[in-house]
Amino acid sequence: MNDHRTAPAGRTEAAEVHRFRERLGLPGLVDVHTHFMPERVLHKVWNYFDTNGPLTGGLEWPIAYRREEAERTALLREFGVLAFTAMLYPHKPGMAAWLNAWAADFARRTPDCLHTATLYPEPGVESYVREAVEAGARVFKAHVQVGAYDPADELLRPAWGLLADAGIPVVIHCGSGPAPGKHTGPEPIARVLARHPRLRLIVAHLGMPEYEDFLGLAERFEEMRLDTTMVFTDFTEEFMPFPRAALPRVAALGDRVLLGSDFPNIPYPYAHQLHALERLDLGEDWLRAVCHDNAARLFGL
Image 1 (spheres, rainbow, N blue to C red):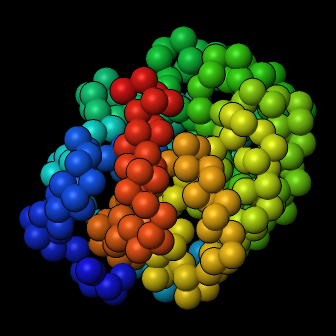
Image 2 (image 1 turned 45 degrees about the horizontal axis):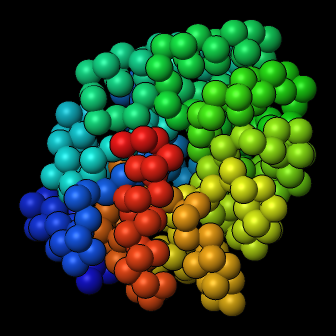
């Protein structure tokens, strides 16, 4: 098993991922939390990690897959990832619409990427969200921490309603890890779901570090889901460990937990996330559902 400090090894790692899939009898993986965005934007994100920006929690965070876009997509395919996302997000007004235009083009030239879009609380948000939906967007990304906004902002109410009606999932970073934001935590999300109980929110990072609070919300709202991004890995266990007493609750929600990785912005090999899930020992059925079946069903793959 790769330690989280081990550098990625190209074909060797692809073979390791293949062995993981083979043990489970999986046709491939579905990863709902991978990042693709305009190169100059992605390079700014990498620079933020390189310089230990405040939202990284002061952690040393070397980017494991700092490669060109074509190399990154090829590597996911080598790993056997059948479908992935282009998680991108604005940090200020006026960004979301042009990010959505880029993402629509990326989806056209990358058929195994689930067409991704984003949003921000600003005038016109309902209009460009509707445009993205009509253009075929299959998943949205919201980043409460980076965007520094309240997800229950009145400006977002019509957009959330539109997405709930359309049944389009939204991967949302709303937990307070690796560093808290003004509007992170479970309470704002509880207000959003109280207004839009059919909204298919996928809480990123299992809500790290408010794991149990977000599990509680998922137990209340049957359309809410969680992704595994970075959770249970050696890296995350060192600073925001998951409470082992809550594992039975994760097992019980096995049909609503989805594989996420944060590729390429992770400080360890891709395979380590898979092994971290495997060593929870929640059973092969749970692992198959998380790594493929749940997302395949949600997105009709």
